[in-house]
Amino acid sequence: MNLLLSIVSLVLLLSLSAAGFAQTPAKSVEAPVADIPRQRLEREIARAAQSAGGLAGVSAIHIESGRRIALNPHERFPMASTYKVPIAVQLLSRVDQGEINLDQMVELKPSDFRPGSGILTSLLNKPGVILSVRNLLELMLLVSDNSATDLLLRLAGGPEAVTARMRALGIRDMEINRPTINLIADSAGYTLPPEKEWAPELFKKLYEATTPDSRQTAATKFETDPRDTSTPEAMVMLLERICRGDLLKRESGALLLDIMERCRTGPARLKGILPSETIVAHKTGTIGGTLNDVGIIKLPEDTGHVAIAVFVRSSGKEIQERERAIAQIARAVYDFFLFQPSTPPAVKQ
Image: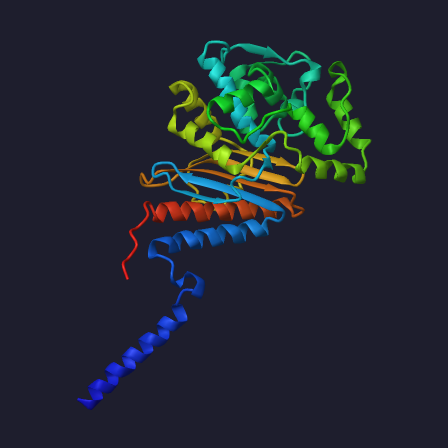
């Protein structure tokens, strides 16, 4: 009997010791059990965000349940090329209203070609190029073509029309103000001549005439410019509406999501460390110290969709480091909403 009591006592002592090694940090002990996974997610997002350098902003919503997670959700960030998503929404709204036809052809003049991302300037920058609105839309979203973007922004009614569309949707913390050519010029610190003089060779000369110091001054100013900015929360509001399918007619909404799912830029960002079969409809943005990715992640096994925006600004770190941080944030959010499909009830003490 004494031997049995001794064994029981030893087992209890070892159990208590093991519990001591595994206990939650003191600041989390009093938290409701239901909040602990969320707190872990918040800590992981903050850790990954810090590794990106500069300032990071995150907003994510599990669309079916309405649960949210965020870091600096109301801070303004340069959208860079992620602003091509609201441009696409406004353009397709005009398609739905019969003002534009996706099959109508658009001729590109020499002054329509832009520097930066895309293939039109690098491969087809000669007079006589004619593409359909649908072709231009795919180029804008698939490969982030800047020439296609400025043409479509013009067809969409200009920056003011895009911003007005966002206001009509109740999205107030998002501004679309400039074509991509002005974004590029302002971020690099050179002044554009009259439009009739624009050409790829001219843009190259204008950039080469700048100095490292002038470019740094321009980049710093660009990072704090309120134009063409969005909060993470505003962008996620737009993505949520796109996913719900209540912004556009069925055909237009399906087209937008289909193109975003085939986006070829930024594979190491939101999609970076997600399971390879994961469907992500997204759009990236990169300019100077700004590196972004925004999109809709489809969770497996009918567990829903996550709209997510990750913005990073004023970072001096290498692109690969910033991309890794975005990938880590996306994976943490993915795992949380996959394995916590609904908030569990708190355990009564």
